[in-house]
Structure formats: structure tokens, C-alpha cells
Length: 303
Image (cartoon, rainbow, N blue to C red; front, side, top):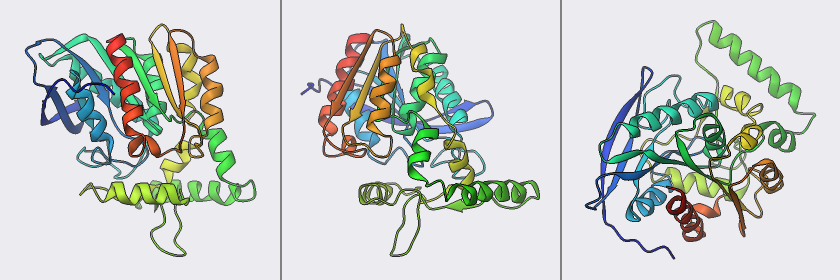
């Protein structure tokens, strides 16, 4: 186990993402070192900073890193409209705004900033690592690789026409000034519907959501539309020479294991992949220690 060598302080921060104020927490280790390595991180699909990822931020900070953990635009403490809308491309750009903000902090060495992401944001950091060479290393945990392939597996071909029609109806409604159509992330009662209906996902979202006063069990239907063509794994070959760590769950059906393993083949050195037992949500709880320790070792080696 990685030794926790520091206590840390946590404070609320906000920063400007080209007109949208994003808010989160800055964790700083208690240390005499004046120029700290930094980690920028945020959560996955429809999730907030209080939903287990703050534990990763805490253990990173206790190992000597300055950590910025923030809520995505349109979610939680951050500003942005429409609420509960996940635009992955905007979220990727917001990672870059967060890197810019962190690089201005006097406590942080701007030449030693890494990014961490999990699930949907695990896909985001693949793009950020490819696009932004200020990033000195990438840790991508159970990442989205291909929205196209994942959605093809999740939605039967017979159901696709109705789904696409719902996207187009939503676009008409919005054009006419109406409210975006929203849908639940997970079902909450018998006969309810949600994007994810398997028990692992339902249990994780509802238990994690209970930890956050701001969490809402819904996203706009456009969030689903955008996710279906979001393929961040296409960028994985462009990350090098930035070091990449890919942390994979061996029985992942949300962001399928085989897609992650296959994508890793396209990444160039320096790179490392670790496949661990468990499903998509085990990194946050049951296997938190092993996932966080792998990340800590990678950040220590490359930052």
C-alpha cells in the first residue's frame, strides 16, 4: 500500500471556463515544498465530486500532490445551462480550463500537472492527453472507449429508430423554446426506466447520489444522443510521448473490457495497463485501494 505521508487541507475554489464558472475543491498537502506536482480530476457520467471520487483526491493529496477536483458544467456546484446536460466535448475542453487554472496557482509547479479520469471522464483524459501537451501523464480508469460500439451493444437494433426519433423530437422542442427532455440515469422503483438498469449501476448511483446534496438522477436526452458518437479511444495513439496508465476492470459491461484492452494496443510507449478483477463500479469501493495505489505510483513516477 502507498504510504500516506501528509495530512492535507481542502478549500473551495472556482474558475472561469470561458464564461462559465466551474467550482470544486483544491486539496493541498501539508508540506514545506513550495512547488507541488498537480492532478486535475473530475467524475464520470452524471456524477458529482462527492460521489466517491473525493476519496481518490484525498489519498492523492496525502501522498504529496496538489489536487483539483471539480464538478462538470451544468452539474452540481458548477454553473452552466441546460442543467443536467452532458456534452462530452465541452467537458474535455473544461479539463483544459482546469489545467490552466491549476497552472496559475503559486503552490503548483505548472510543468508537473497530470490528469485523472474515471468512466466517462476516463475517456475524456484520453482526448486531453492527446490534445494538450501541458499534461505530463494520464491515468484513465475504466474509461469510455467507444460510445458507438457501447451503444450498439446496449440498444437493440429494433429499438434504435424510436430512440433516434426521440432525439429529433427533443431538438424540435428546444428550437421552439421548450424545456429539454430528461430521463433517469437509473430506475428507482419497480417498472421504472433508466439508462443503466443492472443492479450494480443502480446500487452505485443511488448510494453515491445519497452522498451529494446536489445530485439529481437525470440527464437530458441530448446527453444520450451525444454519447452515442463519442469515441475518445480514437485518440489513444496520439497521447505518446505522454505516459499513459490504463486501469481496466476485468468484468466491465458499462465500458466494455474488451474495448479497453483492444484500444490499449493502439497506444504508444510509455504506457501501462492493469486489468483487475471486478466490474465497472468496483474501483470506487471494494477495490479502491488497489486502483488508487496504481494511480499514485504512476503519478509519482512521472510527475
